[in-house]
Length: 259
Image (cartoon, rainbow, N blue to C red; front, side, top):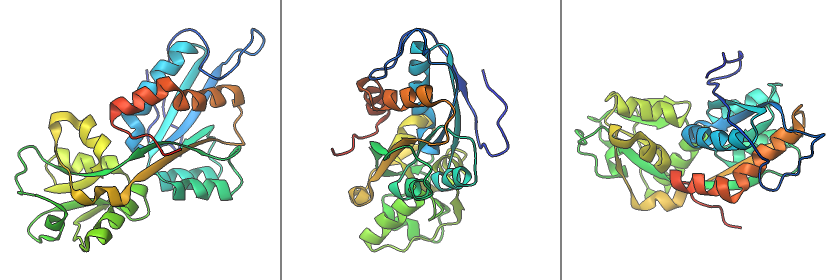
């Protein structure tokens, strides 16, 4: 079931389910979790947070989770401009800091996942891409995330560490847009997150590269101070941080942040 997105929303997904409270969140018969929780989340979390929301709303049937997926920097800007959001999950500390410094989070954000980059190419690798050095080949069509979004910042860090100056043909505003261009065969290669390669299945081939460890992305999550669904929003964050949420993240290929 899908709900029409409000003006600021890139994508909205409605998820629901049935019974019991989330781990670590107390509820009583007079304080039932209910209502709609709006979560702005990095595009790379699309599939994984959908699975988490399915599990969460199975335990809380009176809660509806609506997602706004997109580039973390754009989502942060929307929140600062007053978008009605209850929870923000970003793909980098830098984009979360924009919201924290505006005084819009309730407490300190918590790191809940990590991700690394991987080269994505169309099935069969028609461009013969072998590593990051191929991103300088002028005959290839290359897609990267724009530098202002986390996947782009991570890509630039990886290229800098390798001493490579890439020559992209297109710069996209979120990692899913890069992945889509690879899936459609519009480019010979793109740099995306390893979790996106896994989620794409046989629609792309993935190529790991040695310098990926130089650009690990850490994902923070926080409830927003302006949330009108404090109990449900807090419960959703708790579920993401719970062992059940951790297992879903692990299954999707996300790493666990260092404690």
